[in-house]
Image (cartoon, rainbow, N blue to C red):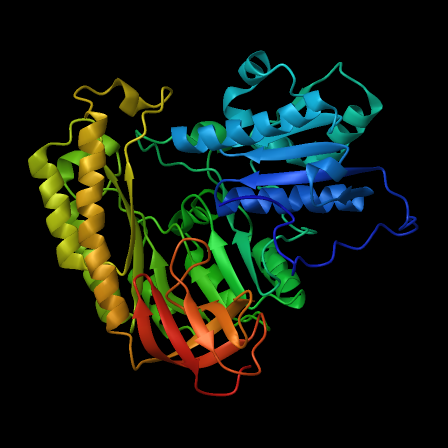
Length: 473
């Protein structure tokens, strides 16, 4: 996800101004660019809320703004390139005189810190991942011309930062809810623990309070995100507590769908499966990044799971959760991957028939253990393997879509199709925002945020076409 904000005409109203504040008072105007994953999007929304509450006004374009904030991603090389591109675009506007300053925040700022100022000295201020609560002070310094402290980096907290009072930039009817911060996994290819610290669970009561706040603001679909969702609670309560959290979220009035993302295969208990299977609100959609299936590759990645355990878990999930849709991700070309090991992965994907899957080539991250492993795979081989695996997955996805014809599905309407009458874009339970396909819906009386009962009448590659078959609600 990458976006210059605001990106949607349905962006909700800003949080209420502080008591006694003059609503006509504007400290300054700013534009905001949010890059990266849903966890970073939540951070963006929190910073937007803080700036709004402090008297700063969000505007549509940099030309209207006094300053720009770029909330960056630093996960892999492609994400860093996108972040650098956005930063450079804002710095060019500053040099042209269209902006007074540029603030860079988020994972790239956290990962590179002072080196980023050396590379791009025109950046005015850096705000690390855990410095986001101070974004208003940084804005004040920028507009006040204070340059004695150009960065704010805070240590990773033992308690996750609050995500309340967000100025949401998703459509009003769905929102991401971050239930923990950081990660205790030490996957050899991943730099996230270096940027976001160790796993820190947000207490159940705080998560539920945020869910209630979001539901009261019109959210119908709650997308649960974390770096490692199934690990939730282990650090705080001494044992995983996702089951208890889900039981409490089940009670939140106003929510129709609860969607679970980033579920690591470990700590997936029978009780957790039963809670998901028996829920009225948790949709039968599970996002479980597997990365590979060959045991040697899994060991080199330090995934701490084996093929046999993964297959046993997938079998349980399929047998116990009706109409389950599985999403996963894989890496091709990890150091040392042989043709035989890759073919094992291809055969596994063909056998399992995941409804949703993403495939990425290995990204060499200099400050990770995988960078020091021998037998790095040539880029052209990584790319070729990705294409092969994606072709297998595409056939599976297209076949699944074709088999949905004639099925009755509820579709959550996200937006109208521009220039078309009574044609809308939505998602079924099988489609997470931004990463999966969509459902085109035809019918009268629809509106953004409505849930439309539909009959699926056609498929179009990764997307479906549905006709309204009942009264929207």
